[in-house]
Image (cartoon, rainbow over all chains, first blue to last red):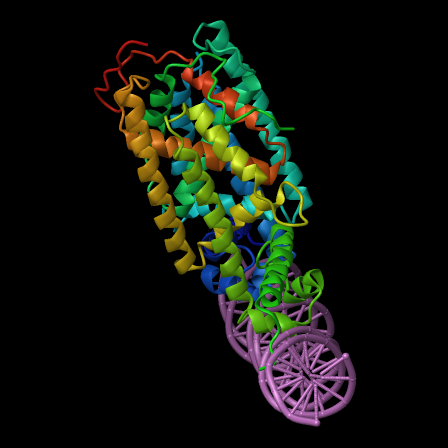
Length: 217
Length: 217
DNA sequence: AAACCTAAAACGAATATTCATTCTTGACAA
DNA sequence: TTGTCAAGAATGAATATTCGTTTTAGGTTT
């Protein structure tokens, strides 16, 4: 028996994943050809097809891995005790996110990969379910956190905790989008922005602006 | 001259754009084949290629049109006088956004198209510039708006107005992403979420960013 | 010797695009 | 009004290319 060590196999697999991730972040899943990937990872077709059944499996592996990293960032930040205020919480999420890197790629690469994972859910139902399930978990954790805000007297408005949780997650997602599009995201922007919002006075619930009526199903 | 009426030409062009938009929203720009588009619009290849030089031009036309609609929603909402509070403002943006529809497609379709426009900027530099320029315009308009908040005493924290503006835009972008991914976005979620954030107390502890001295909460 | 990998060639399927052809339109002459 | 006819509009099978993948034979490492 002359087998290569398991570490070698793992390293090869990682080498492929990293190279493919660079390609995908650069040009997108479907505008990247397998030949692009082969050239980037520096391996032959036969080698790559030994580790992955095909392009779809490679995409699925990278997409799942990327989303898992995102989810971990959200959950790790929300585990802090006592619950930090939203600016600190989301700042931590974004900081973890910006630290997450694709080996050998620039700062924008991971964000670009993430927004492509979003679009890939259109085609890949399995991935869509993974994402839906993952986000539901985050929502629940963050809803509990918002409820803790209310109980400690930090949150005054009488609004569903779930709505606040979804809004916070949306803000983080938006900054991921901005990082992917413009690559100029600094954590302070988000932290300051949230502090600014939190410092604003809440208008009385019955605000007769008139031009917009809350009629939506 | 034996030509067909200009209205006919315009209608054909729109027919192609609408059908292609449905395809692209469903499966993405690059996973959609021209034959898919041809079948969806009910025209032959030759007919479509009379109106568009090729797939790239079709993609560019649809992407630009979609982003223009988004930008219009942001700007129309920000033109309201007096400046409405962020919850009302972003609520209006999201309402306008959810009204924007691709003819013959479901509620998620337009949001799905938008997130694909984001990813398309990776490949299309021209489109990337259009987006960067457009978002910069929105940022400036919204920064002015946040400054108006501060002057009217609504905003207390001493944070750059631009940071608050970017955070608000990020929140809207995040809800667009959620609508694309899960399709269950209601405007009230965003409105409640922002009201909740605005009702929270700003911590007075020194923040890691430096000597931001918050005033009364 | 067995597992790993390479390099190159070849594969069929799928792709975007073209082009020779047919159909349709509408201005104009009768 | 009616008939004519060329230009415009549309067709769809054919084209060349590119794609992902498999196969081949040979070489290298353990």
